[in-house]
Image (cartoon, rainbow, N blue to C red; front, top):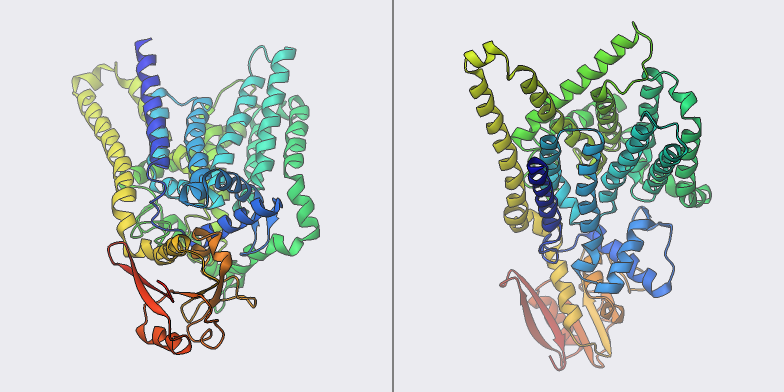
Length: 556
């Protein structure tokens, strides 16, 4: 009872810490708002205004609507700030940490393994950064973790001795239905999820090949699972049936099949090599996703991952080899074989969206669905070490040569390294990463501050935002490529007309004008003063003078 109490306290502490770091200072880190985040926020604001909450938002290369519609709810509640924009992600990330613990428990990992595995996913920079950034991709590991949990729960219930009772059969069918509903919901999250059903197909094949009478026993369950998945995904399927080009657009635009001056084999080989390399040596180079191209896993974690990968391959090979010689069994044996199939299938299948793309390789966002598999594989060696210890700790030779003390020291050292790796990832995320010039640029800190300025300025009769020369502006001059500024300054930005530096000189009205300049350019301000001599300029500084903007009006 005492051990159970300490384990429960430890798990609660780990999960609480994982949740805390996904919410703490969410308004300031990441230090700005990226274009894609802002676009999601603008679509959410528009949906709130019009009441048109879409299944699929076709602009900005197309995005599934579920996450944006949830963002719309929080923006309506909290306003168009960073909390309203990113709160959904912090919730999805926190639920993933909780779900991963329950998945490890259902997979029958030991208490220590569950604690370490949950700690790793809770403190992973890879998972943390997307838990605090308003991209819909964070929902992929969330849906996968809970889909696997309910699927495994259904399997475990169905193989209990009393599973033939009506109550247990009904419970198993309910779990299969929930798992199927979640799988179908996954299609509403992110394009990378579209390959996820292959994981369940491979897992199902492994059960059919190794469990005698599995298919006959689970016909109804399979039908329930498939029907629930189909019904859950049906609204999106119906949409794509009449907008098929939107279904293909994003994936085809970044595909390795469309790389110029290189063959598919060359592009594919380079992509898969870079993505595998990212786990050990050099990760995503995009400062929006990573810090200084650090590997996706800290050193100690990457060692565990490599060992876990080898163990899982061994378990699969051992079971398949024995199946060629023996009849199928129906007992609950070879637990780690099924865990290995799950982790290997998930890892390789969810690596495909990144591997099959030629843009930004390695791309940690596109392979985000591999996160559950990676941390299961990282946890597997801990389980094997404990199993080895139980088998040899009472061995006389082992005790006589003092290997017991050495083994304990090495194992404790490994645990300390794992813990150190986790806390170092959290430190890097909150202390080093937000200060980097690359991070500030990636999250468009300058445009973020420009949005704050527009938001705080009074509205004049005629309002103009003079952009940089390379900005894109729509034909009606009411929207631009400055999505970060538009989101932060909403709804005041609706009163503004956008012009590139010299385009507006002959167009602006001198009746109560207000001109906000994206660039600090004295010559440019003088040109506009020639048109409206009464204009006076006022300077606004942000971030201790790092970013400076000028506003011109008749009464600044």
